[in-house]
Amino acid sequence: MRCIVTGGAGFLGSHLAESLIVHGNEVVVIDDLFRGRWKNLEMLKGSPGYYKMKGDACSIEVLKEAAEKLGGVDVIYHLAAINGTKWFHE
Image (cartoon, rainbow, N blue to C red):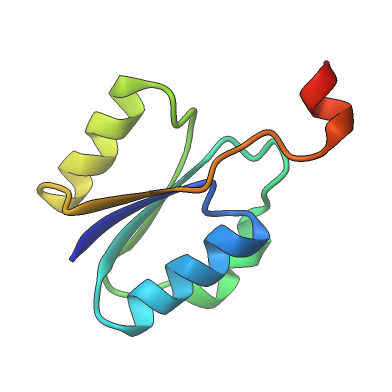
């Protein structure tokens, strides 16, 4: 499958991306790095079918670019979110 994982540089997203790659899927991780970190995805560096993009998952341009990297998309796992009550209320 061709997958997009938004919020993929966070704890849950990075583990999901790793599992998807291990099972032979192509994955584009999109994260704005507000709370996520690329270091969470170090284990995927150089993996075939793995791509990462810094950007806002709400941007149609970012999603289109991600889809182009894969030649289409079969599924989007949307894990991007404002995490923590401090940030939520601001």
